[in-house]
Length: 268
Length: 256
Picture 1 (cartoon, one colour):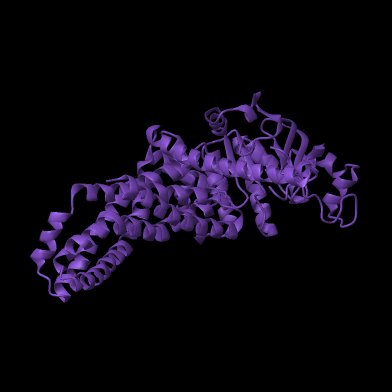
Picture 2: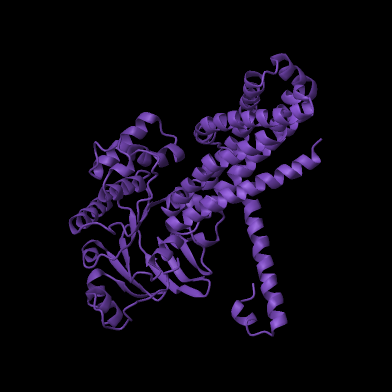
């Protein structure tokens, strides 16, 4: 790559082109590193030995520890949906569609997205901080010099755990949310239980379930990927870990929303 | 055993190693001294394969490790033990699990045999009864000893010590040095140590090398280095503020 010292003496138009080119190369290199990181971690799923004990520990770390927040937020999301949708539908006399409206909103969009965002805030940030601290305290170097590949040991189990736990947590979020909507619609607003669930069976199809599943599955890759990458490449000291954690949560959340829109537009 | 030849490493525009050459003989204790930020840790990270040089070679028993692929480098690393500056203990594991970790991951020993070897190593570093403690629950000196036990549990041929006594009181410094010498006499490993501890290291080293401005400016037996006529060496050994090097010293390795 051209040294900045050389380009700084160039005339302004050339200097700007060189600076722009350098910036573009940096971005492409960073994207390449990001992609290669995922590629290597994925390859270690297929290349033995696979660390099953680490996988179970990561499932507990990402999944089980997030369960309370997933149930809590799922319940209140469903209740808010139940209340607002009921009030809106009652204006046009279509309260009977409350069940399908709540279920479709949760299964297709809110369940996968909100669940992924909450798990990013809880487990994703902890994942970045944990790996970042391991980086700055030379624990990752210690793994390397013990001839243990840190990616195989730290990243691959987190990725697999994400793929397993995100769809499960999303389905829990959806079910709890649907019952939250039931509580408000049936328990408070007086809708009949048969109407709530009966209409739901009519309107919610297999394609809605598969869309929610594919979204949750892909978020289960995106969140551990971003969070472990940021931790693995964090800067120096406590400030470096703090910055990496913030960047991981922001980047993962943005990618979740971007990918949600993308999948929403290509899936039926 | 280890031959470093004409090693160069630059971070950005900062040249940290500028043609460094060093030889470490089998079963000796080689101590590398030099001012803070002088590139000692960068050199050590090259020796254990964590950094690749811009140019130059590091031969371990005739094999240039700077050109090896990861799998071949791992095979060489399996002969190494490393004691990191802060210990680098896994804080999610107990003292026992930390020391047992390399055996569990890299050997085919059974649980009973691993327990026996770990207990033996912990006893050798004076930590019997501490196996169930968490690294956060023990003192800095104990953490260093756990790190030494972990580095030695696989019976390595070469052990690298990165400032193993930094931050310890003088009694603990001598205790750790005494422990290293005792273990070295028992297991006859090759030891490469980066240290600031003057004059203590002259009592434990077989040879001392002084790194300054990215090159080794003096190397030899402790007595020879102590009586060197090089003013930079003399200034460093005596800790003189005024002398051949500026007060701020070398900043060659500050970035690394």
